[in-house]
Image (cartoon, rainbow, N blue to C red; front, side, top):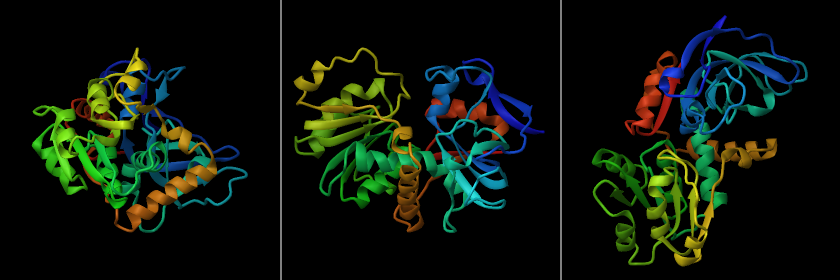
Amino acid sequence: MTRAIRIHAAGGAEVLSWEEVSVGDPGPGQVRIEHTDIGLNFIDVYQRTGLYPLGNLPQTLGMEAAGVVEAVGEGVQGLSPGDRVAYAMNIGAYAQKRLIDAAALVKLPSGIDNRTAAAMMLRGMTARYLLKESYAVQEGDAILIMAAAGGVGLILSQWAKQLGATVIGCVGSEQKAALARDNGCDYTINYREEDVALRVREITAGGGVAVSYDSVGKATLEASLDSLRPTGTLVSFGSSSGAITDFNLGLLAQKGSLYIQRPTLGTYIRTRQLLEATAGDLFDMVGSGRVKIVIGQSYPLSEVARAHQDLEGRKTTGSTILLP
């Protein structure tokens, strides 16, 4: 027997239950892994609350982890017991051990340790598609990053700086502003004290930004749109403040023929080829030291309810790790 965090109903952090579970031998195409480090992400909160319905319950939450291969099933090639591996966007990570399709796993290069991998797979691959595909950042672009001191935000800021962008980060405190500036932001805006769009216009001499990368959602929608240059792009990739509903498309015309996208990482790693290319690009950026992964806090997996509460309460910075 082993242990996992499961939910039997959607709700608050109190529904997260630390339970004994049984993990059998891997079937054809499967691998059994022992997790060493697990990533915490806002998608876990969305699934816990029911914003993203999970279907039949109970379910083991968690979308990202790193660990060691214990056993491989029939037909699995390229993986052996003892290999260090990581994955993202595959529910069931809040567990000491699990079965998973081998096709979801990537081997970790020697320069990436397990803890770093668990802190970066979902966030780092998200940053990669945001910067290179949702809106392809060009040298000289001014860009806005909401929640710039968060796990994705810190990676986005560093990577965008490597691409030659002028990076403006939106944060909620001076402590977070300092962290954002240390990780690539040229300018920071405290949304609690400043008018975000007005400050963006001041920084860009009235021009506005090429893109706003916004994981906050409802609370920052207006500020993101009003910060964009004509024909600019809002990439809304999260809803930490609540989902955007009943959006009036006519606003895009009124505010400068704007573009808007609501992407998800799963689309950008939907094939093995895409997964390997995306993960490989991330490994290269982190392994070379051009992007550093900031782990702001860690919690025992058994205390994940506290981790969820801190994440929802905006008390975390950088990436959060759960220790099984």
